[in-house]
Image 1 (tube, helix red, strand yellow):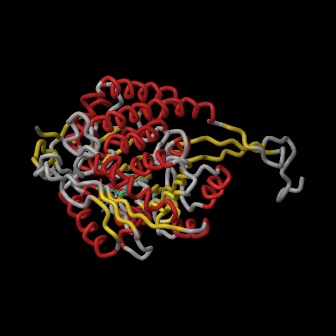
Image 2 (cartoon, protein in one colour):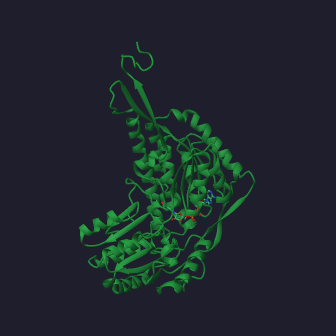
Image 3 (tube, protein in one colour):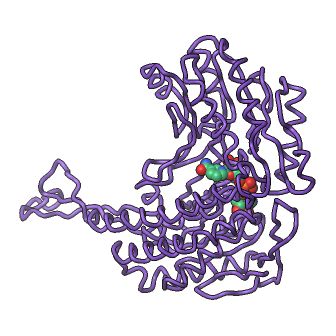
Length: 490
Ligand code: NAD
């Protein structure tokens, strides 16, 4: 199978004719080839978006755009099974997780349909000013052509988190999916065409980061960049944005803590700690990859986690009952294995760390746990982005917080405790954009999402996500009959 680029509502080969291989991480075989767009294709897509934004699209109301968003959501729901199966082959994740992601993507389009309608009623909102001779109003303009660059861990969902608010705001977009998982973004392009979204409003250019991605980030006609990915790429994207003073939002990596007090419910804790690090093979930006546990219960908890980790069914994401699929790519697999080697020299190796013996192909890795991890260890400080849990202990609340916050990242943090006052106190003191109490990872699309420190700039989701793609315009009117009387003294 082969795919082309989706530009201005039509399908094109890449200008330079390049192709990229799409590999199923469960069997390491190429099952699809996509056009590898380069700078010239990005230029064509940006030109299409720019033309769309000055055409009839610029005169649509939020209500009109909500119609398109709901139609896209309906189509995603109708095609949920097929889209999820594509995601499994592309990314490796177990089918139930892929079905969850696709359902969430549909929900996201519906949610931003509602926000698009609400935007109509916010237009012209009067802002109180302390001089009644003036009236100030705010109108919200779309930010313009938006470049959306997304990673491979939630291919369709990360695209939805950006495409839906951008369309709700009235932008026209160029979406650049990860070269590892380009297929559901192309399906989104096809769905947009099926529901009659005007040509040029959504363009999808598959290709490599260093070529297609870099051109999108630096294109002078792109006014807004929304990026999700790693810190080094985020820095490159922000630098490119700075050159043209583009608005930029960055959702980057993390090394999130989960602090466990000795009064926490042990069964709930085992469940949430495992969900926090093994869900999506640990390839989750907000994965709670550092467990900071009160010393007295550490041995018991680590034993339980180790026993449960060994029971996790690992295999092809399409096989019934699979809870842990392969990592996304050879590159990622080798990177995680390197960290496991490093960890063995830094900490106490507890379990996992290798390819399961029953799987001799595919990028499969056992769930892995290290204990006694010192705060100086690389596996404590650096984002591994795999199913690897690092455990350290604490004796006082202050010590727990110091360990939790001593990170260059600040995306997420979790606390497990039966003492609700203490849990709230810890939640307030966490240096993170997303905090969970007595759970880890559940994410709704209405609250804000994003991190502080090196985890990013800005927030996605909810109305914060919509505001990312809007430029407020102040309109101030002098409404008094009396002369202003500054220069002309009457
Ligand atoms: P990545 O930075 O390697 O790639 C992300 C995207 O950027 C891809 O589409 C890639 O092609 C593109 N890209 C690469 N180089 C580029 C360049 N020079 N200019 C423009 N674009 C370029 O990240 P990844 O490996 O795909 O994803 C994993 C990372 O994403 C992890 O660090 C993870 O924490 C992060 N992530 C963060 C969130 C969040 O919400 N904060 C969500 C998901 C993933």
